[in-house]
Structure formats: structure tokens, C-alpha cells
Length: 368
Image (cartoon, rainbow, N blue to C red; front, side, top):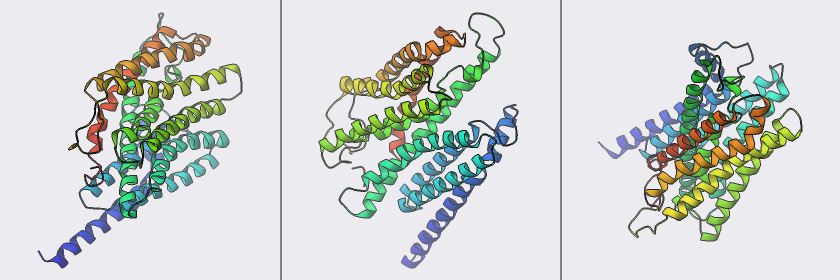
């Protein structure tokens, strides 16, 4: 094959990838409501026109995360550039924002629906796009900076996807069990609101946060100095904890002591994730060999076993001290809530085991 034919094939591949990115962005923005309705119908759930709860938001983020993952895979294989991947995901985010505004305008509870959707949308901006933009401020060729920023965006999107799927799966299993409970000490008033902090939300936040917030540890050389690396981890941890607390507190219907307690407990979940990760890293840390690539946790296998254990304990304590009094007011069993959140901590810990395979989406020339 001649050089001109190779360049033509590469050009066609990249054109097809760019076209697929535009179609994907349009699907995320305009088709998610239809997909959400179909999903709820298959699950046997009724819905009212214009009101689907949180399902459309979850569908949006799942579609966006899947698209970002396939984009990262295509970029690593040379079928696309990371510039195309970043632009496709960014365009999808703009379309999603417009769709959120459109849905809130057509809803009877528009203001509340809009701000709730924007709160969740803020997590995507903060964990996907903000880190990429900040990394682009480093010195070096713009193409390499875009690849690094885009790679971190893809890792965050992939971890968001696995967090959504594992959290949703655990929530559905728990709901099926609770729905079959008609009487007894372990029955709850409303299986849909039993968790208070649903695992699909908690895991979708904490999974990408560990990947992004601690990127200065697992991606050596990403930041120009150890001081910047520590500032990055501390800054991201503070952002996630404060945003989780303020968002949940402001989203509450009133500003009562219960709302404050709910916000504090929700903010304590990422705080527990930070503390657990730091302790596990401190106990399992090792010095990497000189010939090791820059991407990968410099730890022993003990780290991966400490994560489920530590997250289980921290989530159970937060459920007991933070969500327990709220559950008592609803006459729900606190012990069952504590066990459920402890189990979710185990699930989240094992979810984080998927980080090393996801790191393979990062081009070797940028992670070595």
C-alpha cells in the first residue's frame, strides 16, 4: 500500500470517528428520554409524562461515559485523535446542558428539576473536564498536553460508568429484597428511599474521584513537582467533600437540622473514601522500579484488599452516625441501613480494582 493510500485510509477512519462522535453527542442529548422510558418500561416501572425521576440523568451519564471510553480506545488504536475525543465529549456535554434546560422548562417542577440536574451535571464538569483543563496548563507541546488531559478524562468517564453500573446493580438487588418484605422487623417504609444516599450516586461520585483525585500518585510525572501533586490531591479532596455537602444541603426542601445532618453525612462519604485510600496507600506503598512505566499504583497487593475493608467500615459508621437518625424518623431499621451501606463500601472497594485495566486506555508514549 502506498503512502498516499495509507494517509487516505487514516483520513477516512478519522472522518468516520468524528462523524460517530457527532451522532453520539446528538443521541446523548436528544434520545436519552426515549431510552430512559424504554428502560423503565422493561423494568416494569410506570412513569408520568415529563417526569422520570433520576433515570434520564443516569442514562445521560452512562451514554456519555460509554462514548468517552470508546473514544479513548479508538484514539489509542490510532483510529482517532484525542482532540476529536475531547471535542466529542465536550459537544455532548453542551447538548446535555441544553437538554436539561429544555426538560426543566417543560416540567411542572422546573426549578427544582433544573437545579438537581445541574448539581449532578456539576460532578461531570468537576471530575471530567476541570482536571483536563488544569493539566493543560503545564509546559510542553499542546498535542501531548491534550492527550494527557484527554486520557485522564477517559479514565474518569470509565470509572464513572463502572460506579453507575455497580451502584445501580446493588440498589436493584436491595430493592427486590425489600419489595418482598411484607412484614417484620426489617421492613422499610419505602424501598426506593431506603438508602437515603443511593449507591448509584455514591459510587458514581467516589469511583472517578479516586482515579482523578489521586492521579498524582498513580500517574508519576503528571505534575511538574511533588508539591503540585500534593496540592492537587488536597484540592480535589476538598472540592468533592465541600461540593457533596453543600449540594445536598442546598438541595433539601428546607434548612432544618435534619437537612444539615443529611448534607454532612453525604459529604462524609467522599471524606471516608479519601481517608481510606490514604491509609491503604500508606500501608501498602512501595517504591517503583526505574524501568516501570509511569502509570500504575506503586503499591503492593495489600492495597486492593484494604480498600473494600476500609470503605465498608467507614461507610457503615457514616450510615450509623449520619443517616441512622434520619432513618429512625422514618421508622426504618437502622441496623439494616448500616449493613447495606457497609456492603456498598465493599462493592465500591472491588469496583476500584478496575482502575489498572482502565489505565490501559492511556497511550504508552504519554504514560511512560
